[in-house]
Length: 145
Image 1 (cartoon, one colour):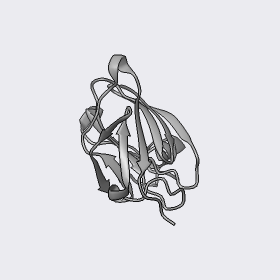
Image 2 (tube, helix red, strand yellow):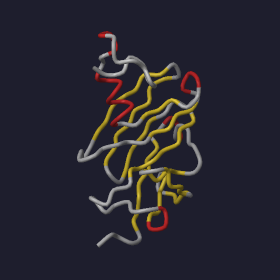
Image 3 (cartoon, one colour):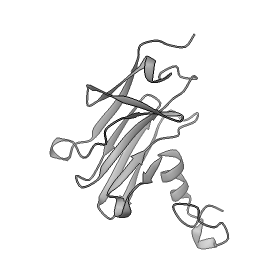
Image 4 (cartoon, helix red, strand yellow):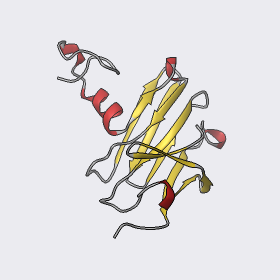
């Protein structure tokens, strides 16, 4: 069984067995950080997957995520602030650490911070111009050997 709620729910109720919650929260890494999804953090956990995408319904609109190991596209409602993060991985050698990785948001370098096994844009973002998707990519300066 899976959790019956987004955070710390029980495992004892059959109506709580939706695999979608595990996918949205676990693999796509979409986490609500304020009531009603006023803010969120998006930290994909792809493991050995090369691609994952999904649409998360919220009270403020849909959050659409297309994630790959070193990039992701996120469509956000304009009334949601989101912190975007990419997973660190020594396997794909794309993202090593903050010192060796440059994060680009829509092609512009942004300040990066390390958050556990992820490297995140320091400042939260909202929707792009005209509601366009935001694109977070990494550019490694030094690769593992």
